[in-house]
Image 1 (tube, rainbow, N blue to C red):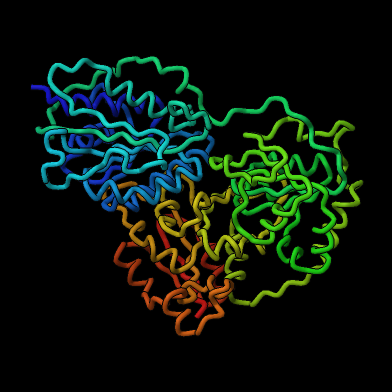
Image 2: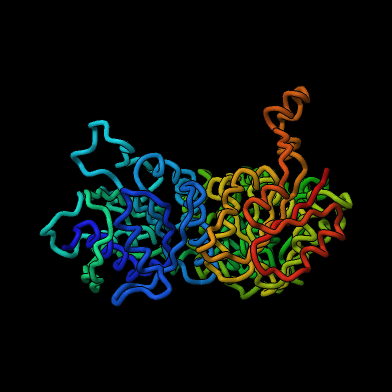
Length: 554
């Protein structure tokens, strides 16, 4: 006899797959059993007749699994095929463990679909085990939240198909009810399941076709087709933040303005790029140039440094475009805020600027070339330099959101157009959590060798992300861990002026962990290096599986 919960689960999985959801991350649990059985079939090497083919990723820990889903979604987008990633959990605390990744997805505009199993209505509020208030648990961090009544005998087909269609549309940026932000994000479907929860050996039917309401059908941030051109001032600059894209370079080159591009902007290339812009801005020449700026154009969302924020804060004229999922949080004093960069910004009314004719850009480049920087032979920046040197054009790399990305920002080159690696990071909230799992997800989604650079605290915060079961697909990912014995990034903040013992205990938090033993426990190859030459040699080896290269600075 058909099990209503199983029938619903098959329809939901098939409908999500039909709408472009390829990856499903599953955490084990009983209440989510109907979905688990359906995904076990759809994710098998030889799925049953009629079942969709999906990529199933099974993980034990929901918190790390959610960041794996986030990395998968980032990887799909980096590979040119953006799509939501679904994550399945049982009820109770399993649901709460998704929150950190959901917060990052919300602020970064990453499409996720959260499928959380729940007790049926009659078991809620009566002390039933593993039962809590899951409806609305993610608050404003999801673009839509819906609770479905438990499937029952006699249900007409189509309920799960409609849920799937609307969830995908909203996750990809379709308006959520009256919300017209047009930005991707997470969608939460809280699914009640009533016993029996087991497999029923039922057949897979083609998912029913449903029409999605026009208000939820549009995908992505609306493109601005026409907008006023940028004012033709001489002394402008372009600041490219996270996710800006190559269009930021095009804007800078069209106007002969210097380009200050963060590592994950996707714009750190071309003749307008200023490499060591942070060291320049700290120098007398850089401060003089900053004082003479007439206009600042911000593309993407800059998050890394106070000097850049200071330039934005005191801009005489400020234009902002493509600020990402947090476009409503663009600086309040901006003269203009646009969802996307219009075509009119990539050209001038008087033609395209020849960069060699820009006196203003030439001043910036000459001043940057004259800045002298100090770099220890073996330190965080030296590790970052060797890491970048080992990347080939188009390689994918994930950067930890603490000291590592800042080191890359300071020493990273300006690449030739078309030769840059793809640098990714969780900059929505810039947390260090989930970085290992994110890198693993990126590697699985792209199917290519993936590199990651992070500090020891970031690595330890998500060391469980190394756990890939023997029946799961193992990625090719190399994680370079800068081990300096603790959170040394705080040494550059105001907290460092406190008594040393206090700073060490509550900020830098030395850990004393044996990374080699941890890696051995997870079955991951580990290599320790103690100088730049040894690191370069380790990074030159072919990447064939999961490995950790520990750069020991102490």
